[in-house]
Length: 390
Image (cartoon, rainbow, N blue to C red; front, top):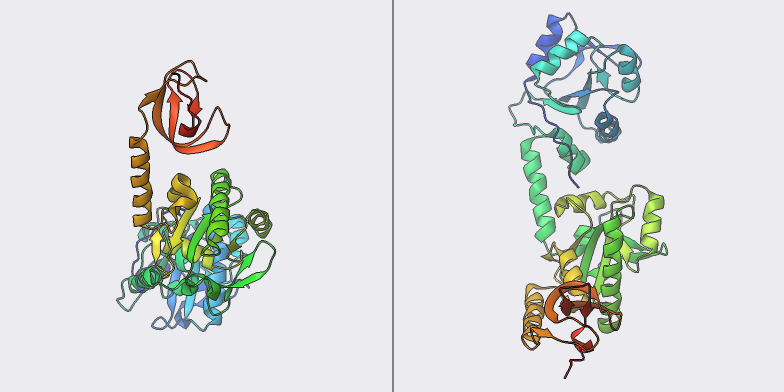
């Protein structure tokens, strides 16, 4: 799923202090309205970020709780981090209401001062988080996106750190270890629709489909039905060589429970952050999506939805060679069929056509691929249901 592109230009801490000094401000305020002298900071050891936000801004309301969680976690871990709120609220009541939700410090409410800071740091949209660095490190500009992608692992918010995290993602994606993708030191299992737990280690050596979907999404519900059909066919014909793991984008636990209840496979726990990590690792921008992982733990395809939609269980083990074999078989089948026929059950000439899915008007069963279709009316016929006129 895509995120807003919030950015601000990073400038040295000295500029921030200079602007405050020009307005006669030599302190920040804490939540208890205590004055915290600017001279009390250890600027060499502390990472300081300016948080431009406003109570009237919906994206700000959405992002602030995430930032609070990150701030508290990093402080608990002993990280030297301080955030300074710069309000873009229209009045002091809005400022106070917004600051009540924050555990960090703030610049005193002064619309003129806030305007100077916004202009000086080229803040064009909010929320915006601007890290102030004195050590010469290149700082990641899209800090909101970095935090939403990586959480506390993004600290200390430098471009070097983003490159390190991207390298880790690349290694996870191509590393060939399904247990590293789906488990972590605090959890070694996935869950079933009955609430039971299955060890991730049991998936090693299987072909695994990571199904990115949500109950609120109508296209997901439509694709789930197709995937269930393919899954059950493979289970009956090939045993348990194929498994699916739901990576949910549901909005809450209740919705997740309803979603998984209709599925015969496994799921990542709803509360686990691994769901978001996998969306980032496999660059999932829309749902439904199906990423197919081979028995060696390496990706086969990130376009498993198309494969299942077109070929269903026939495409197993979903490799390029298996897809090519199906397509070659279909070509041969098409070559063996007449280009058009006159069937005794229909008044018009029927022409050979390739269709993703259709329902035969004679036997009323669903068909795929080759069909004899009428150009004049909505009529389709399975090749096996043809009765040509003599």
